[in-house]
Length: 247
Image (cartoon, rainbow, N blue to C red; front, side, top):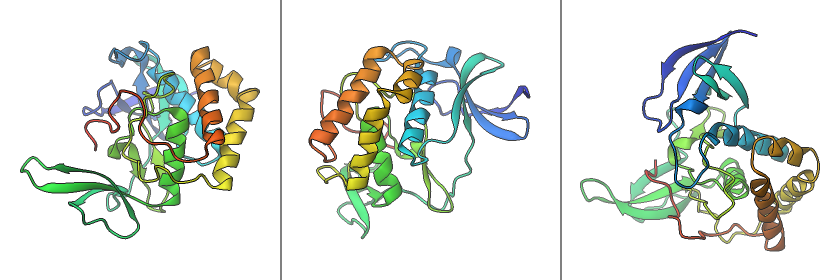
C-alpha cells in the first residue's frame, strides 16, 4: 500500500486536518493526535465517529458520506476520506434578505449580518438534503454547518465533518431544519427500519468496533422513536439548535 503523502493543511478546521495523497488518490487525513479535547465527547474518538458515520451512510444506501476509513499517516492513526471537488457556483445553504424565501427553499432562521442587515438562513428543498437531514437525525449530528455540505456539479450533496456524532443525549445541531414536522415517506421509513434491523446483525457489530456500546444502543432507540412517530423531529435537549458558526 502506498504511503500517505501530506500536500497541505486546512487551517480553518478546529482539529488537525490535512490534505494528502495516497498513491494517485487525493484524501483528507485527520490524525487522532490532532483532535482537540471536548467537554461532551470522549477524547480521541472523533476519527472513529467519522468512520461510523460512513458505515451508517452505506447502510442507508444514500451515498451521503464520501468513502471514509481508518488508516495511518505521518502523525499516526486517524481518519482518511476521499477528497471531493465541489461546484463553487452552488450554495445548498444560503443567506437571503430577511423574509425573501425563494421558491423551492426552506426557511431556517433569521439574523443580522455584522453590519446589522437583516437576513434569513435558507436551504434548498432537495431530495439530497432531505436524506442528509434524516441521516443527521439518526447519527445525532451535532455539527451540520453549511460548509459541511458539499455541492457536487451533478447535483449530488455530500456531508462531511462527522466527528461530533452518535452522542447518547440529544445533540442535533443543524442548518437543515426545513422539514421539521414533515411525515417520513414510506421509503424513508423503510430505510430506518433497515438500519434498526441491521443493528442486531452486521451493522451493530461494525459500529461496535467504532463506538461505545451505549452509543450503538442510543442509535437503535433513535430508530425506534422515528418509527413510532415517523416525522422529522424538531430541536430537543438543552443544546443550541444550530451550530456556530452557521456556515
